[in-house]
Image (cartoon, rainbow, N blue to C red):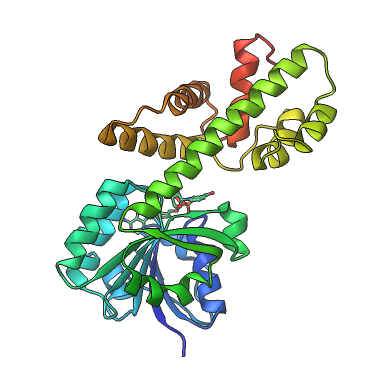
Length: 294
Ligand code: NAD
């Protein structure tokens, strides 16, 4: 028999994840603070819940997929939230990208009420969410991880228990800083190649075949070559993640100079109104730096 799940946060990612859970045979109650996000969500295995408490109280597993740390704190610890309402199975899977230190604090608060919390942020974007092929990096104890695994398997393909509470978020930060710095490198190669009058399609093709190849080079360089800044993983969302990386680096006293530089370039992009563009729009920062706009 399927697990009963309360799923909070039916946004770009959460709506696909909740549907995949229902498709896998679980009973899913969904809730979002925006009523319009819940339109069209009711269906086989999917029930729209009137509140967070209504979604999670009788659930075996409560899942959150929210924008940032304050929203996760609100839903988990705030009035009418999971801590207050309780959740029958005593298991929370927090899948948003949020602060690792706040994650540890929340897990400790919930543990005080007999509720185990795993941090399980994801990589793979809306396409990975829709295709149930997300990479999921999980922090927390082994026993709740074992209980959560069949649920996670309905949403993702690569699921790794990476360590204690907060470790999932730290791995996600590592993922995000590598992506940001790598993208910066791709932009610089294209900026230099463009100035030299190279065929950027050929430049990309040959670099992809060697040690400079990467996901960014494969997937985003063609859009840069086509001068296409439109959506994808938004600059604003990337800046949120870079803020989390910089905060963690400060907390731990770890210098991350390349992350700091990448953050400044993303801020420059946002200052020029690119916040809603895809993060490949970073190439436009380089256009501005070398007066190559247009
Ligand atoms: P989103 O903003 O589309 O969805 C978040 C949802 O949470 C929204 O529908 C919002 O209304 C809801 N919400 C906010 N506060 C709430 C509250 N108090 N109670 C109930 N619902 C509330 O964001 P998303 O793109 O789905 O991303 C979710 C998380 O996953 C973020 O932390 C993001 O960084 C991370 N993530 C996103 C992507 C991506 O490509 N979009 C990829 C990997 C990870």
